[in-house]
Amino acid sequence: MLITDFHSHILPGVDHGSDSVETSVKQLSLMHSFGTEVAVATSHYYPTESISVSEYIRLRDAAAGKLLDAVADKNRPRIILASEVLVCPGLENLPDLEKLLISGTDYMLLELPDVSWNGMIFQTLKALGKMGIRVIFAHIDRYPPELVKDILIITKFKAQLNPGAFSSRSVHRRYSGYIDDGTVVALGSDLHMAKKGSYKKFASISAKYRDDFECVMRRTEKIIAGANML
Ligand SMILES: [Fe+2]
Image (tube, rainbow, N blue to C red; front, side, top):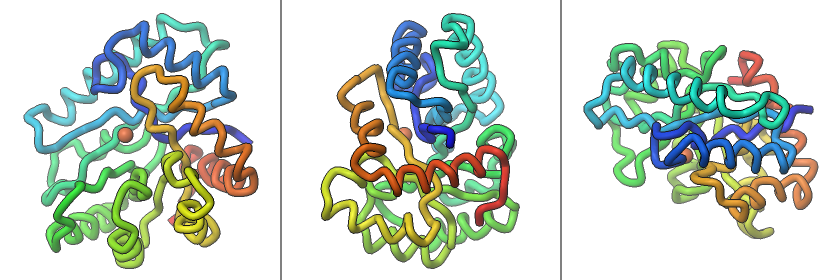
């Protein structure tokens, strides 16, 4: 079983996750020290900002290149390039949208907006599904549970959890059904900067909820191999 951190902001200068190559190297060594074998690098992409997808990808890949030059392979997890894409109405029409997929897969990590999940968002999600994009919602534990329930029932898409979903027995109970029924296919630290304390929360999921952790990690392994889990 591979240990995969499916949500991390570790590429220097691409978003607010890392301010330098040095910080990113520290992030990778933190991940490595806690046993993470694969890191999905999910830098933010905001369609509402003026940068095009192709320009964002150029910057992202250049940042990844600088980082990989600075750290020995044996001291870091394997890195898979991806993006955390904010959903907005009309996202399906964005030129080069497919470049935002998780590398080597048809999956895309989508961040839901904090407010206003209106009909247009649902239209966009439906359109993405029709285009063959396999959506994984980022950190569903960050949103109102009733809204999450609705969106998962309507879309039947998959989801990723942050450590917050495991912060207490009662919070865990809220999400354990989504682990049991196969909705949750990934766990992520959502690491920003090299904060040991926050990474420890991700790493400690395996000790507190071993069965859930291993079950989800096995699903993630299939996702990054490109298998259809929808
Ligand atoms: Fe994130």
